[in-house]
Each structure stands twice: as C-alpha cells, then as structure tokens.
Length: 463
Ligand SMILES: Nc1ncnc2c1ncn2[C@@H]1O[C@H](COP(=O)(O)OP(=O)(O)OP(=O)(O)O)[C@@H](O)[C@H]1O
Ligand SMILES: [Mg+2]
Image 1 (cartoon, rainbow, N blue to C red):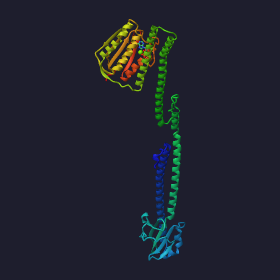
Image 2: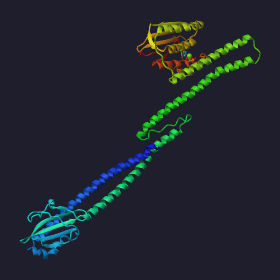
Image 3: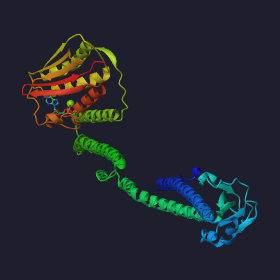
Image 4: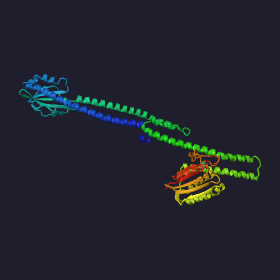
C-alpha cells in the first residue's frame, strides 16, 4: 500500500520533506568536497615531510667520513625522526649490510629504484606501499658517506592519518544528519506559520452564510500568493451577495405587488358576500375581479419571463424580419385602444430587414406602446418608427404628454420601479423586460424625455 492511496500529504509536510531532501543533498555535496580537500592536503603535506626528512638524513650522512661512521652516529640520524613514531628509517651499506634500522615495518617494503646521490628528491620519487593497514608512502635514495655510497630508505605507515580522516568523516555525517533534521523542523515550523493566512481564509469562508454575507478577506496585508486568491474570493462573494440581495428584493417586491390586487379581490368579495346582491351587482363584481386577475396574471407572467432571462433559460430565435410589416401589425393591435383614448397612432418606417426574435420584438415594442398610450393625454399622439442607424436598425416609440420627471429617469428601467404610482396600474416590470430583451439581442435601450415629448429608442446591432 503506498501512501498515495490514503490521504494526500499536507502541503506543510510536503514542503518540510522537500526542504529536508534539499538540505541532505547540499550537505552531502559540501561534506564530500570538504572530505576530499582535507584528504588531498594531508597526503601532499605528508609527502613533503617525507622528502624533507630524507634530505635531512642524506645531508647528515654526507657529513660523515665513511659508512662505518653511520653506524656510530646512528643516534644523530634517529634524532631527525624524533616525535614521528610512524616513520621507519633504514640505512644499508653498498653491499646490503644494514647500518641502521629504527623500526620494522608491518610488511616488507617493495624494491624500488634508489635516487642517485647527486639528484635532489622530488614528489615523484615517493612510492606507495602496502602496510598491514591502510596505505604507506616511501622513498629510497643514495647518500654519500665519505667515499662510501649508502642506501637510505624512509617509509611511513599512514594508518593514523586514515584514522583521523575516518573520524572527520563520521563527524561530518553526524553534522549532516543534525543539519537535515534541523532544516526539516524549521521548514515545518515556517511553513506551518505561513499557512496561518490560508487557515484564516478557511475560517472566514466557514463563517459566511446567506444571512451573513458581508464578511470579506483583508487582502492588503496578505502575502502576494494569497492576495489573488483573496481577491477572487471577495469578487465571488460580491457576486453572490449581489445575487442573494437581488433575489430577496425580488421576492419581497413580488409579494408586495401581489398583495395589493389580492387584498382588493378579498375586500370586494367580502363586501359582496355581506348581504344578498342582485345579479347585476354580482356581474359587476366579477367584471371588476377579472381586471385584478388579469393584472395578477400579467405580473406573474412578467416575473417568470425575467427569471428565465436571469437564469439564461431563454434562447434567442432570430429570424430575418420585415420591420415595416412588424410595426404595422403592432400598430393595428393597439389601434382600438388608441382610438378609445383619443390618441392618434402613426407608423413611420422605412422598408427595413433585420435579424431579430419576432416574439421578443413584439413583446418589447408592445410594452413601450402600452406605456406610451397610458401616459398620453387625450388629443395627443403616439408614433412608432423604424430607421437604419449607423450600427443597425433603430426602433422608436414617441409620445406627447407631460414627459418623465428627470429625477425618475435613471430608475425607470429598474424592476418594480413606477414613476407615478397613480397613473400606472402595472407592476413596474415593463421597461426592465424591454431592457432584458435588448441585452439578449446585444443591443440597448435609451430614453429622451422633455415636457411634450418622450421617446424610447431600441438600437439593434447589425449581425
Ligand atoms: N411614455 C412614458 N411617459 C411617461 N412615463 C413613462 C413612460 N413610459 C414609462 N414611464 C414611467 O416609467 C415607469 C416604469 O415603466 P414600466 O413599463 O417599467 O412599468 P409600468 O408600466 O408601471 O408597469 P408594467 O409595465 O409592469 O405594467 C412607469 O411607471 C411610468 O411612470
Ligand atoms: Mg409598462
């Protein structure tokens, strides 16, 4: 079973382990470098020492009259090695007879060439040899005692040097282990501390509910890496809060607007039932109720339409339309209403074609027409027009009348906003539906109003 199948490692532990691996690798590299440098330095210093001692011995021998004198003056030669127990000095006469021997080597020395008496010793004259433990170094040179040549052999066992190196390597490894452990622990503590900010994000996120959506993360003092996350989180909260607020406002407005016609219905019915009525009275009541039912039904229909637009459930079905014909149809539909209200209704349309959803176009223009008729006093005029604009077709509904108070203008496209509650019997949804339809088409709606003339313009982009 590998740990991958279980819970994944925490980020803190991962970073700490990574730090440990990195520090072990770098400690190992530095340790190996230090070890080899020391080893190289020790062996070259040992070789130099061997040459110096051999030269010293040759020099002393050169001051002696004969090979026999070497035997007599042995103590002077031995003194040169004072304090160096790992050295072995042997001097032989030309016939091989030993003249001096300080110690016996653990293994016999190999036969190597002797450096001639006149030549100075160099590092190249030093040879390896194999003692019982470790490695040894040796040099063999000819010395001149008066007229007698003698052979000087100086050898050294380096087992104590190797012992020093071994201890050094052990110490290095110990330091490496300790360093890696320290790096891991420190890494863990540091990462754990840095994660505090992340944990505060989690705590804040846990603290948020639909009734408490005003909590935001403080991004200023967060580290750069978390700042982006915090900003995205806050932006998401803004959108959510906006959505929740709109939804609850929507529900409250809807409930409020439905209550009015429902209260009217209940009251009228109650009054009617309080005593016996004539058939005519009942008929009048039902007719009045019918108006309220219609209003309720329109309100629910409009609300549902906007909800579908909000949820992007409404698919646009564009068709190439003859705008002149479309506007004429709408004109004909509203003609009777206009006549009733004593309002002149006119169409001014160029022969135009555009790709627009016919059902939605009819709904948008009808909403504008209904508003225009409702706000045009008897004797006024409503004009429906279409023309080719710079970016696409432009449809306008203009009406005479007092116009819209500039204070109301910025709000009339808001849902449930009614400028003068007395005149408008609607719910204040008509214009927000027109705007939603224009947004669906990638177009826009604008209004220009002054006393005497109010014009709503729909601009459709060319596609
Ligand atoms: N042509 C207009 N002249 C004067 N005021 C207007 C005109 N069109 C709209 N308004 C004002 O803008 C407000 C918002 O219009 P909107 O169509 O959204 O709602 P409504 O007509 O009141 O209700 P609904 O359309 O939902 O039945 C209206 O209440 C009205 O005061
Ligand atoms: Mg309206």
